[in-house]
Length: 109
Length: 120
Image (cartoon, rainbow over the protein chains, first blue to last red):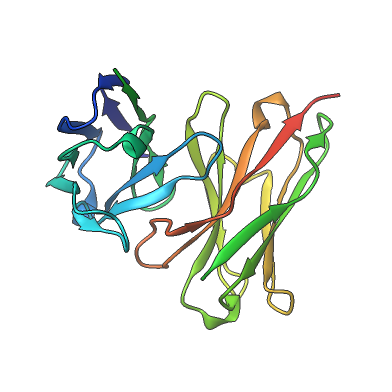
């Protein structure tokens, strides 16, 4: 089973800032099959990125994903007020189970 | 627009069976284009993939739950179900149903989630 470790656990930032979130895998993620999700309180996660760097339909271009192998990042180029949420990474490159990171919470400074 | 909606009891007694159903609208399960998954989220926010089912009835389960978990599909009602037996307090979580493609298992549509508490 691939373990995903996200860092940091919590980030306090201001609107307009740039932020990079990290997701590190315990083994190589085959085919860079790594997704990112955003979750707001009381809601289901929303898909942001698949295949490490492909934005999902309707996702603003301030969100970008990169990385390969075991190290992946999600960058938000300029934080908007609605971006303060919890972000999860998920790998689907290996046989089940498909696993998630523990999440990074972005909070308003 | 595809929508998924979970339903079932919010309270289950220890040692009993947790049963949930996910109704799919805006797309047919019989299309064969997707897997339909169950995912749960613990109070501490961690997410755990439980398993998937295909329209044909084929399934894939998380090995950690395989002995207690079963899934079924009813294509006539466009819904799929989860049964988790011998539950304990550790099974208390928000349960989500979600859609994925068979070859790329990321989750593009999710239900709103249903809170299930295991308690006597």
